[in-house]
Length: 261
Length: 328
Image (cartoon, rainbow over all chains, first blue to last red; front, side, top):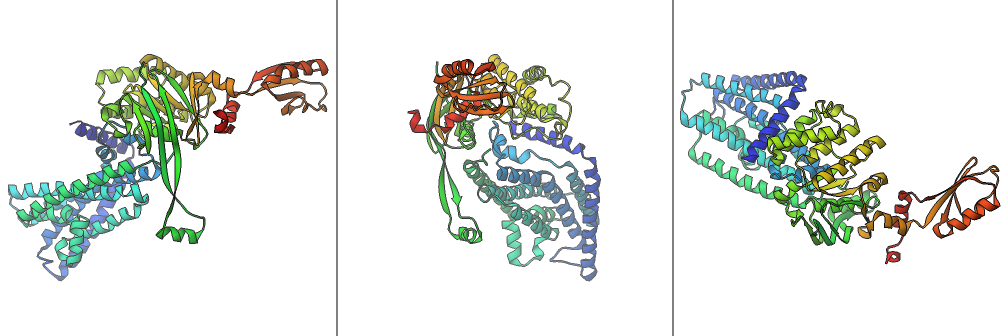
């Protein structure tokens, strides 16, 4: 309960902070539309050649792109900025203040930053998903909706855990920015459903960098492809990744010595 | 009275990778690293009673910050016992963290782009301070530090001193019983230093808080601390009253006077520290002070002669230069 209250307070501060930089909103809108525009052009180019891609039709892939945009926006709004700040603080030894607070340290370092304007992507992505659903003549089905939202939450959590694991290695390796940059490159692969990739890449994107679970699985849910087994698998992986991330974090904090003043 | 801080044989050793300069050595380090043990803190012991304000002194790298970090639970001691308010800091028990605060003069925790008031709100949420109590404390501190017109400005628009005052308010809103202050007046001008000093003194009095303070400004220490603990190379050199520290280590006094003939040589009387036109400053061993004064006054035509104790900075410096063996 206190955790939620704390996260809410940080969210409030983050939003107030963002209101100071209105120009960022306009830049973000521009970025979103450029990204979406190039994505749509790519999609059209592919479907000028074929009508199916690994069992996904054009409208299905539009839904994938919508989820990709939504999830990407959420990652850049709430996960990435916190992890980047954390990396910086571990490197410079300024994590001290966070660790002397009477609150769970992992929670604290995970909720301190929030980039409101990235939510433009979340909103735009949601609109794209709705357009895709209209094209698919989608009929409201409670299981698809529940599957979709639970898959989104689990996907978000998995990406968070992935980032936290990578960031926590900064306790030992100090410079991990490069590894973090790698994520962005790999995440871009999530623009397409992971089924279309060769096996090795598909497994990599599923279990190493959980892009599949962040994008393909929610999109599968809303387009009626998700099986209960996959959903259970996602749940199991979420729990496992969370336990791993938590453990590494706790060991890292114990190991942290802070750059001396 | 039972002590609030109790440290015995506390040590913190770091393993630091070590290599020669140059590319070849750097490449070798990829495969095999050699480590050196740095003894940042090497077996210190002391006790601090409730309500005491203790100055924690030592040159850069003496182990002050490391000790403060162990006390605030950031570092695990390599050896020794450490107990604060009955807690083991390294366990970072939330009840413990609620009773302490750590202020570092060179680091800030307030949100840069927002007015301090908003950051204070965040502190309230973190420490779970009840709203009415929070408002009372906040307004009391704002009043004491004269910050009324500044709390609504974004922190980035404040001067260094104003920002530090805000930092201190933010760090004390939960009314901690123990304050670890690491260079709280670093880089501030004299007026601002004074202001912060008197606030710390006032806080100590009002809330009977215990303060452990490091500072490079001896004025801070003289104004706030009756007791000082001096460490050097991670070891304890002195623990006692500031006045007895002066007594013990100020082996010299300074004598200054005016003369009418600048060509005279004064080195026979003592070390000439400064000779500024017709004004001369000499440093003489304490026990020779009266003899030298008498000589100067009887043999030479000197005016405005004054005798002063060595400034505390110099005293501290001479403490550091004394070998530990000589202390025992």
